[in-house]
Image (cartoon, rainbow, N blue to C red):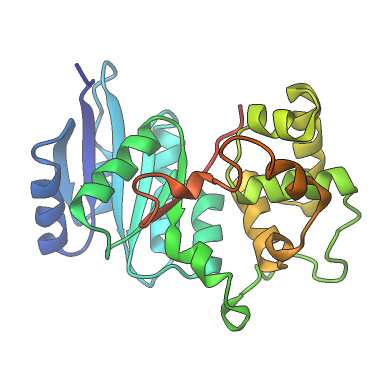
Length: 252
């Protein structure tokens, strides 16, 4: 039996909150409170025996990022998801910097939405699939303003660049190790070095950094090795709900 998840909805518009409540009615996500005020949600004391998920209606303002930080500070074990109207790169990066576990778009259909929430509660990071598509159009690339644009490699080694391309595909550490013929421990060392050199907080931001510089279009030596392996060319974005969301693999 699937464990019940207690859900708390925060958003200005009652129509949005009520619609989301009905979508989740037949799932394991039990909406315990719905409010337009952050303080109403903040004063809630979630049941310690159940998992907790906060879903925030994200407008064009940045106050939702402050709400995310406050909720994460008070409930560090809870999941926080933003549902927005757009997939602006800078806002998505800001959202993950604030501590969200997922950034979803309101254009999602009901089934994929519930599927995305399930992935989040399993430990995945979710971002809009349209964000990945946007990077294929050079005119839509908007690099994060705090990143250094001088040297595209950022003094990364060839191996670290290979790891970055694996991060773009959403590969787990175990899969990277198998593809590159190195140990998982070595993969973790390279990832830590990449995050330090790029001055980013997590794998998701590193993948966005790499995509914004077109590293996904360079044909590295490792790609040839991938073509000889079962399932070659298949990324985590080919998930059954992959038409709607992109999955950023959590650190192992």
